[in-house]
Length: 74
Image (tube, rainbow, N blue to C red; front, top):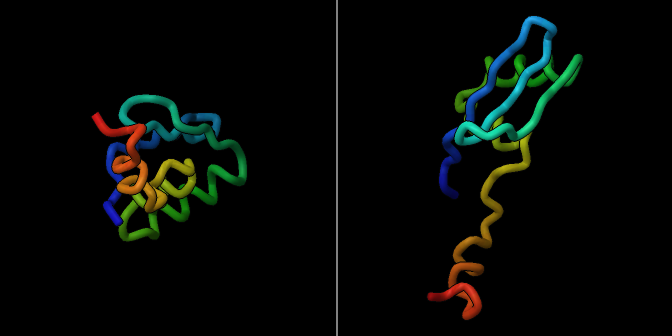
């Protein structure tokens, strides 16, 4: 499975966390969810995987099948 990339997160003074993917807003976390996310990213070996999982923006394994479908061929 390819490793996700292009994720970035910013923490704000009010405790919210915004996660962007290629400079586009992917999600905003507030309160306990933001704290849980921060704890998980600091302890993770690869924060990109954590951010991909929290946003739901990760490879699902069917990209090659979809690319080879006749409708998607050029």
